[in-house]
Every structure is written in C-alpha cells, then in structure tokens.
Length: 259
Image 1 (cartoon, one colour):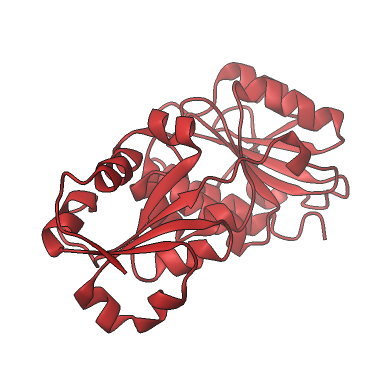
Image 2 (cartoon, one colour):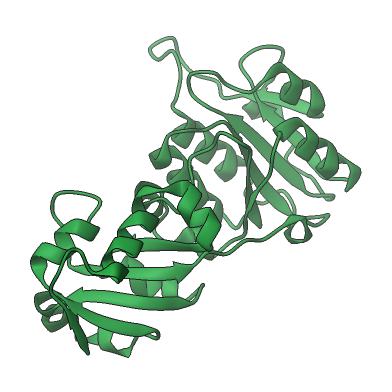
C-alpha cells in the first residue's frame, strides 16, 4: 500500500477540495466521505475509487483492506487535512457520485421532494428517513444542501446511494411533471391545508410529499402546483417543527401509500 506523508500531496489536495467545494464535486462527478462505518456502506451502492486510511484505523478495522479501489496509507496529520471536523476516524473514501435523472421517477412510486432546504443535517436526515420508510427516491430543488457534502453524508448514513436522489431546478416545474405521471403531489403547508389525521393515504398512482425549509416553507408557486396541502396537528406548546422532523412524520404517515 502506497504511503502518503505530506499534506501537500496532489491526491490529498484533490480529495480535500472534493470535501469543501460543491461545484468541484459536481464538475468531477466524485465526492469524499469519511468514516470507518460510512465508507464501507457507501461502497455497497456506488464505486469506491480511492481509500485513504491511517495505520491505526486499519489495525482497528482490518476489513477495510478488502474494500475495492486504490488504497493509500496516510499519516495522522494528513488525515487531519481531509477531516471535516476536528476529530476523525482516519478513514476517507473518494467515490463516484450517483446522478439519477427523471427516468428514476415512475408512476406508482413514492417520493419526497425538498424545496430550498439548505441545512445539510435536515437534508441528510430526510434522505435517511425516506430510505427507512420504503420511499423510491428523493427530489431536490435548486437551493438545497448538497446530498454529498460531508455533513449531509453523515446525517444520511449512506442512504443517498441506496435510493435515487434526483437534483432538479425549480420545484413547481418538477411537481407538474409528477402530476402528468398521475402521481399525487402533497404540499406541507400551514395555511389552507388539511390536518394530516384526516388525509387519505391511499394513493394507487403514487405520491410525492413536498417539503420546504423551516424558515421559508414552500414557495406559493409550488403549493399552488400541488394537488393537496396538509399540515401536522400540534399543540400550542410548539410553534413549528424543523424540516427534518416534519418531513419524517409525513414520510411515516404515507409509508404505505403505494403498497
């Protein structure tokens, strides 16, 4: 296994840029992930091209040596350059970025659509919840956090390679496309909406739950494009739920919609 001892090594600089720059990830079609558990999980769903690991991490996790791709042994100070947070596990992987398109969306399926959800933790949590509750994919509008940023990857625990994550432009146009497929589109909105408890979840043509950011919610254009609008009933002890929690509640409620 080739050893890398310098933080200025060209491969290390390349991997670090994948971590820090969404534009560079998109340009290269690759992303960097970190973690002894996350990297093997991601390798099940998308090609692992390069693995960077410290001697200590390899001793602790000998199965890492069986992963595909080109492997490099790195010094702890090199691992610190690749790490997104202060402490790290000494395991980093460069992966191919899955790029599913509209062909991943089909009538009868169950989908989650996010509009301008900028918090990586919320986006990752919702991708993970969508996979957990058997949904067929996630659709992200412009303005959403990158699904393959380090923070989003940690929150999704690899779910972004287990189900399709389709990145689109404007959400209202995406909603119209799904309606043309016969998919019921349901907006999460506080006003002019039905309580979730009275909404029929029988959706034989499929369903797409459309969720906006905690601060801004959905645009008026997107709410108008959806066929239904629902809200989660709450007591007066809480003003709102964050996008990750609210979306997960909706996903659980509609988990059997197309079964």
